[in-house]
Image (tube, rainbow, N blue to C red; front, side, top):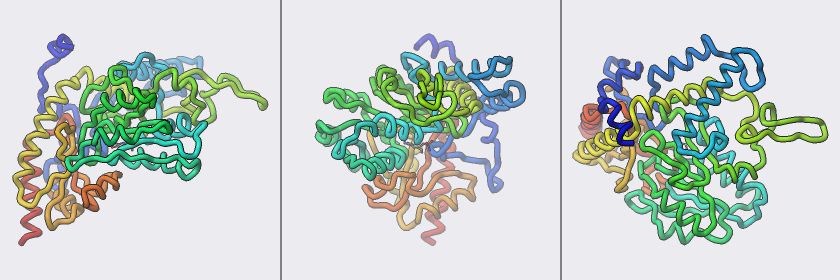
Length: 416
Ligand SMILES: Cc1ncc(COP(=O)(O)O)c(C=O)c1O
């Protein structure tokens, strides 16, 4: 690790910004300050080029062709799978299933892992800070099959209360499914401990890594999680592509998620033999350019820039941003966990978050306002919505100053 870091040039945010063409944009005549990265990240030129090149010179359907382009496309697609495997530290490429994103990955686990054999009264344990995509699939199983959804509480800082979490594991718990990093608060959950506790009780664990993978190194074998889900677009890759990592022993036993082409070995009207892993879970023509773009994005963060350097840089910007925002009268930070990644959620006394977002937009500053698809978290903190600035590797302390200056303007407008 040290060698790889030493051989890479030091992290230079000015240079990194050059890799993202959109960051040169003007919005309402002002330089774009893009702070909506938890919703989606911007794309580096290498990803944009790889997708263009695919359509200009490499396009064909994969897996079934014997001609040059089909074989080339297949090779690019499967090479990207190996890149994901290495990125996550998985044991084998067959443990990497391509999906449409985190949402589909969680739904796949709900359908193919939890649903079969589920008895009324069986439980899934989540936390109070989950994204709707890690709540609603379980509620659908509740309505269909009588699954019981258990929810572990968070404290006023937005940290998981670990003892309460442990108390909610029962002999009926079929799965623990928790966010690695909260999209609404930025809290980093103690996922290694969560896995340890759950495994001690014989319960498998799904980690929702949508907000984690772009901000810190993830090693699924070191975490020992059973499933790990993430989305390409939140780590500088294309939309519509995501990943489900699953331990091979579990994936082998799970029925397919969808039926169709590519997920079969043979079909007669009497009987269908399903394909091997991971193809059993990839029915139909996949998002080929999405997979290629994702592979390129992972190369970008792990090789061209380096996730350790990203984590250190973002930590600096987040600490600085927390300090400058805390100095604004009437501003309340929502989510003050001791370990946080990438997110500054806040409320400004007397101002609706949507008004904050609209006024900041006039300054060229893009933040998100609303419930962030995590309404139970909003309820927990007694607010209908927050304003959220979320970071990526290209953000700077100067942008935090611009945000603070914009917020002071907002306060002046509403208090004059
Ligand atoms: C923590 C978390 N989980 C899941 C999702 C869903 O991701 P996607 O919409 O890419 O499927 C998001 C998206 O914001 C998220 O932040």
